Image 1 (cartoon, rainbow, N blue to C red):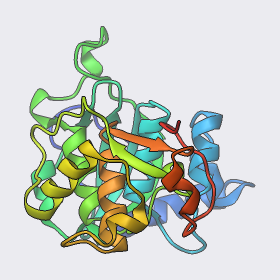
Image 2: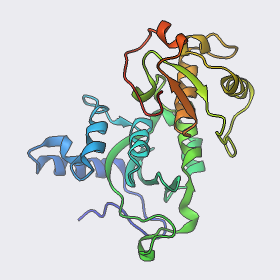
Image 3: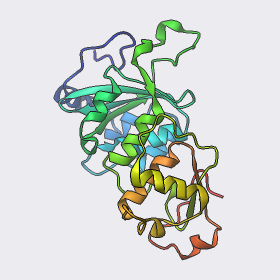
Length: 252
């Protein structure tokens, strides 16, 4: 019987091919097919994740982690990292992630190739939980914000997350703490500019060192640090017509 989450130490990582066979067996025993993999999650999170189910493709790591953070659910996300499976457990309220592989090693690789294989409610508990035997090794906990930042800037997704897409104007929250994040050059200049002025994606695409894709990546990254103000009523938002009109978390 496959043990989905191993609470202690550094587990021997499963091969992606073996893990896929295990998932195929699960799907074969379910009348719901692949959607059965999400059945143990909360209904709201499951519905959110279903938006990102791609026909014949694995889900993107950023999309899934963004949904888990938005719903504030402790979830274990099994990621395909080269030929091995890494169980990454996210604790949104504590802004922590637990991984048997140092996230610095994860982030050294091409993040565009990082894919989600399976999602399940977390077995591990966050640091300080009364059930201490279910709290993972302290050395295996990492800042969630840093991981989300790098995934947003360097991962597969180069368009806005649905929650912040549509006619909108953007500004950085005055209280956003950028400590510990890798930000220099054009990115730093853009964040400083967003602290002072409200702007649209179209306008950001014309800034020095930017285009439409890089602007979307930066806005996603700031949003996932809970530092983006999204305005649907600002006058600049009415002229923005590149995307659909999905209202989102943080909008005003």
